Length: 139
Image (cartoon, rainbow, N blue to C red; front, side):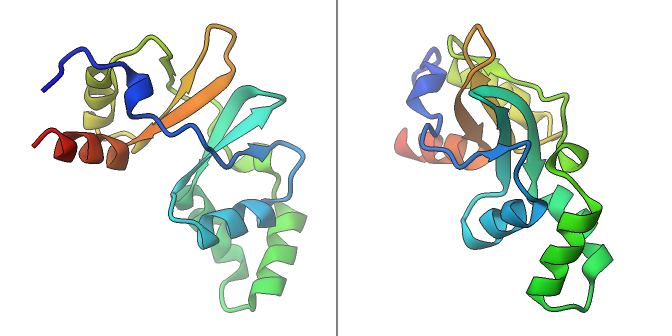
C-alpha cells in the first residue's frame, strides 16, 4: 500500500456545488436525486460551507406529511442555504496525502472533507467511500 499517495489520487473533482443564492429546494433535489450525501457551498470558486443530507433531514421536518411541491415551498420560504450550511468546514490542502484524509475521516465527526488550494478555492472532495474504494483497489 502506498503510504504517501497524494490526496488528488482519490478525491472527486467533478462536483455538484451549491451557491449561497440558490434555493434550499435545489439543495434538497440535488441530495435526493444523486448518490452523494454532501454538497459543498461556494461563493464564486471559494468554499464557504457544506450541506449534508443530515442537515436537510433536520429541516424537512417542517414540511412533514406534505407533497414535494409544498415541502419545497416551505423550505424556500423558511430557510436559506447560508442558514443550513456548516460554515466552519474542516478542509485539506491539495498537498495532503491519502493518509491525512483517512486520519481525519476516521475521527468520525463527518464523512467527507473538501480539498482546497492555497486561496481557499474548492478543488475536490474526499469521502469515506472514496477511501474505501482506494483501499479495495490495493488488494
